[in-house]
Length: 418
Image 1: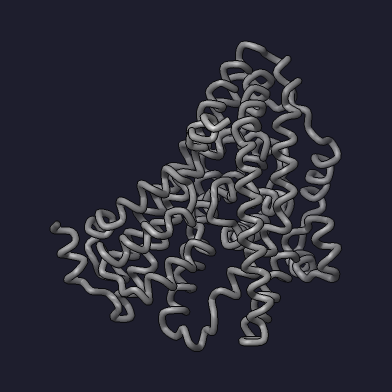
Image 2: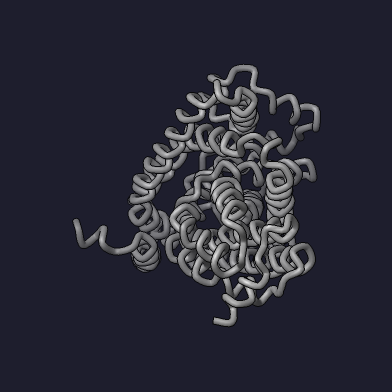
């Protein structure tokens, strides 16, 4: 047992992925008999959605503090987080629309929830108006919303609770401590569930390889490739442009300064685990003041998940293409909002993006069976998404510091010369 846990989780997942493909290819359609293991893993993921979003979002919003006291640093950081998040999710939608990785995949051999697919097709036929969309965002009963796992109004309710805690100031601090503790507890529970990932990945990949064959594996390989391309574009174009044109700093020097944080984030797939390294890189290598680095990067580790936002857009289109769901422009708009909010609500730990899929898929009628398809390859993509998220935290902190006079440019240059 000790030897098992001594192996890093990502290595166990990769080994399970490869072994699952081999077993499924050799076993054939009979591999569907072990799909129950993967279904149990997916059920645990669905179980986490409501409490994780509720506690994480409330704690994330409330942790912003008094916006009046934060002043120029606070609103600039929040604006950059929201804008880059929107750019990221629309990039994922653009890549998914242009390449269409799920088109033409034969899912006739899959055991699909027929009722769920009928609901998705009915939604596609009737359409959803902007008025209905707005009305559905208002939670008439928060308890019912949680019971039905209706995530969009849950997000609105969570945001309102977080804002209410901010407005209550000192009197809201006891409640904030409860949500902070709840957020930490849910992260620990999520990490326990993530320990089941190797077993779930093995069963799901064996099922995919045995039932759908190499065609499905090729489609999933394209999704992995697109995920990496999207992340590289976010890092190079969005973050590079931010450093070049807003912070007016050398782009190469910036990336050289955060290479340690990028390496740790890729290996751990956890923004929270990388937080100390990101802070050290920002302060020592980039010359960001301690006050700006501590606030912006800590906040970013909670709410700045651009890699996750991009992937949620890409994965939603993949699922829609696989199951023949035609999405409208209003669906695209809803995905962009939910992708950004879902990324904010995602915990900075491995596998959080997989949990947030339930949020977006359910809102636009994409069957949740898509999660079973992509769960096997999620860890490979999660590593790159986390690197994107952490790089974004450092980029926003550096840009805000440069805009507010809290950046020691001489220290950045001297650190690069060492």
